[in-house]
Length: 478
Image (cartoon, rainbow, N blue to C red):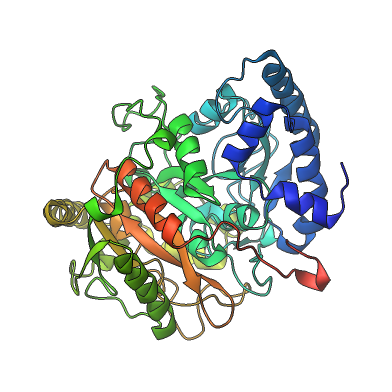
């Protein structure tokens, strides 16, 4: 197959469900797709810096095995032969998991798959590389001393967000249709919004995790994709049970991708809150989201405007994070700390000696927030908000000019605290040409409702065929 830009792009942007159908009909093979992927990686990875591990030989070996299964008529699953990347926070057998940090030695056995990776492998997915993350996935942008700066395919001068910035940048630029990512405060949804792709943070415990992340019950694993169906296909696989996670919820054997159109848009009770009662939002960004909400309403959605959803939970979240960080990084001595990103090191040092009573006060506030949202969802099936409150900013920065490090992400972390499912869907563009996302939040455990709403919105606000146009030094992304 030609490695020219036009040919690699044509195949690269095929969805996972289209590839699965093409494998079934013998129009394409997993080997074709994998070879094409690596040709495209050679073009774009120098621009984006979205990967810290790439393994062409392992990927082709998996692709050849998948090709034989499809030829024999015995694929392992609907994602057999589909390329998948894994964020470098998640254990992946045979490859180091360095978590974006210079403090972790690559010279050790790497002989365990995390639960989600194990499920992907059992389903026949072609795991081809690991995507970049800031150190310990602790920043909402993606840069680290280990891997450098990851860039946004819509404008490589700008950040893709984080901490799953490598995953979102890869998906947006056609470097695989499926990415496994993590989210402890918005790390799936923030980069999905900034890169114009779909990102779903499942309910807490929906996708088993091992080992626990530094942020414990705030964190979850989920998909970043270019459409809702692909995310649903992936969730059906990675949500399968694993005994290593004592906090996992009971397995629900639903095939999410088969249920996406079971719920009509008009049957959903929807609230839209532009600030949730406490956020300060860029006016142009909010106007784009509001326009998308108006378009949904014009197409039959029942939407109420709700000015206040809750009091700001940000201070509670910061107290929780302080307690988790004190425990998670207690073993890092001065020599190791000298290797840590200075901003992250400062936060770790500030967490030293975190007060247990203060931490449990925050846990009680978290429980109250959960109760409030459970009451809220007795009236509304879905809450819509912006995903972030600021527009994309330079990739070299950790936050927008003049703003605090976390001021621009007020919408995402509350739903890590409550463990509710939430997603970011593209809903429009700023005048700069950068994509803007809309946040969909559902009741706890209602992942199917969130995905069904996202699928209905996708029909009204289609985004999958809108792709980044520009790359550094004239390299075409699409």
